[in-house]
Length: 424
Ligand SMILES: Cc1cc2nc3c(=O)[nH]c(=O)nc-3n(C[C@H](O)[C@H](O)[C@H](O)COP(=O)(O)OP(=O)(O)OC[C@H]3O[C@@H](n4cnc5c(N)ncnc54)[C@H](O)[C@@H]3O)c2cc1C
Image (cartoon, rainbow, N blue to C red):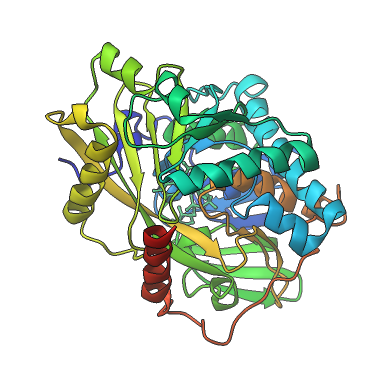
């Protein structure tokens, strides 16, 4: 069993990815972080004539953008009913629309920019882990129809076998917008597009310090100095000491995954007869799907730590997987890996500027595929003056006195989640 992510093993970083040989001395915009957010910002900026360098401490796509489940759909990490209550109906509708626009952005990358990432919009099925969860799903379907005109399809327990070959669940809800894709193909494809528009991709370039100058910023990196008029931080779950103020907005949390060996076609069909992607209704949820080459990817956590042993996490995930699909006993697990999410306290993406004027887009929770791409573009549009504000700029972004650098409270949060899962 390999302890490295499956996706870049299946589709390695292309040897001919057009990365910059030398670090540029000056650029209009320096983007720190070479994942979906940074590359999406770079694509839009470069397309509109700005000179851009993407500074990535490892290789392009090294972070969550090549480690995720590749499952996407509409909505944000925070549930829409809470968003309606918290921000009011008018603004909540705008947030909902951003998530639909974000999905359209993926389609634009696929269709207009030619990013081949095994995009398949076969719908997602969220499955009830307990009977009480199915009752909540009924209310969710009614709420979405009434408040958003968004049609979800309720699947009663008796009909569930037509959607998923598992005895473990008590009904579910289908969102036809749900989709699956190949995360590594997306991130490398997006990098190519950004480079095609002129963005300079600088790998192995950790940014150690950002200082304000009279005309912009001086970035000290592991490969030298870059001067930039503007800086975008797109470091999400890997935000470190470079920007402590940003780190206080977004808590790094670990998510863990395994994949099986490729499964026989009839087993694949049994698991997902209609080509859907899945997650369950627990607080510590599991997400799962077939990969394009017919393996089962099973992800989740029962801890929020970023440092679980990968063999231990594989054992936990494998047990959970066999509970859902007992007939997968005997199929080998080939990869176990982890990656870091950025989780904001209020579960809303964070777009804004730090006190020193540096821009940022972080904090997507497990909804980072579409929202990272979207907020990256949003930051670029703000910088280009194409828009003067963003809905994500207009909501409070609170920092809390009890969180400076170490998220010491995460074990308590994890215990709370476990309790909620036990009691619900
Ligand atoms: C295991 C896992 C499963 C997930 N599953 C899903 C899913 O199914 N669906 C979904 O929508 N979302 C999912 N997510 C979330 C999603 O992957 C992320 O929200 C998204 O990839 C964030 O993109 P990003 O570009 O903001 O961050 P990242 O891709 O993490 O990129 C940040 C980059 O910043 C770089 N960096 C940090 N500091 C510096 C520095 N000082 N100098 C230079 N570079 C720096 C890092 O090396 C990293 O490459 C998952 C995440 C994980 C970890």
